[in-house]
Amino acid sequence: MKAKKVLITGGTGYIGNYVTKILAASHPEIQILSMSRRGLEQQKDRDPQTTRFQNITFIQGDCLKPDTYPGKEELSQCDAVIHTVGALVDTFDYKSVINGAAKDPLGKIRDCALSSLMSKGSSGRQVQYEDTLEAKNRDACKLMAEHYNTACREAARKGRFVFISAAPTIAPMLQQYIKMKEEAEIFLEHNCPSLTPVILKPGLVWHEQERAWTLPLKFATDFGYHLNKSLISKLPGNDLIQGILPQSESIHLRVLADFIVKGALGELEGVNRWSNEEMNRVARAQ
Image 1 (cartoon, rainbow, N blue to C red):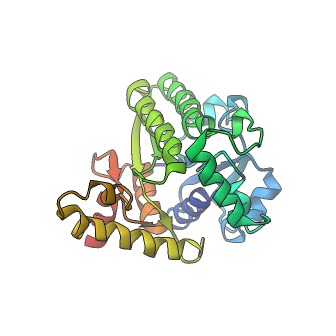
Image 2: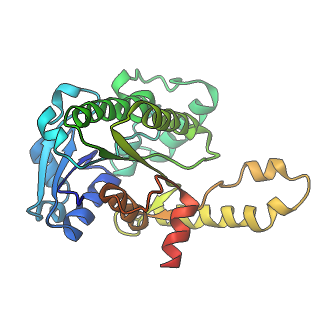
């Protein structure tokens, strides 16, 4: 059955906002609920290109606070939930670096890397639980999936839950991020019988306009990945070198967004788990 209503969590984020625009433009017949912790006016100010679509409704809600979710009846009417909420690191305010608002951004990145290598939370900043990786990457997903599963079960229907997980990485500061994503995957696959989980595991997600600064990272990541795959991995006794090179190539935001939309619409031909390499391979073949 064709989707008529889709809920997107993290709707004002990098991936969530872009997916909202792509889905709204390509499927104007679908009603989209874009949910964010931001106030409604802040959401509307986030991107003028998003607010121009008539099939998007902005709602304020926190995935860690179920009482802020859409009501159970409205949630049960959603044919799919696209869950894009997540945090890369919790040892410093990385979003201020991304947005250019941080003083001494290179120093903040250095301190983050050092604290990740030493001990969790050693940056000296008191981290509130709702700002931790455990909360945003595992528990936010679990809570939303649990409530959506209950709503679907009581409505005697099957819902689709698209989860943006992550590919393996060698970066020490992202190991906890990967672990929490994987724990959320396990929960989806074993505790939500009224949902069809669609799990996407992207590597570095880049876009030349949405986040121009990811372009040099894309070139560095792809160079290291292909060097490892085509040369280093074929040489004997180079396990150490292989271990410090990228484990996955980058993926364009539009490629990932297309898979997210297809997953929400049930158009992935029954394949509900996609690695970074599989998504790129399909995109190149088209």
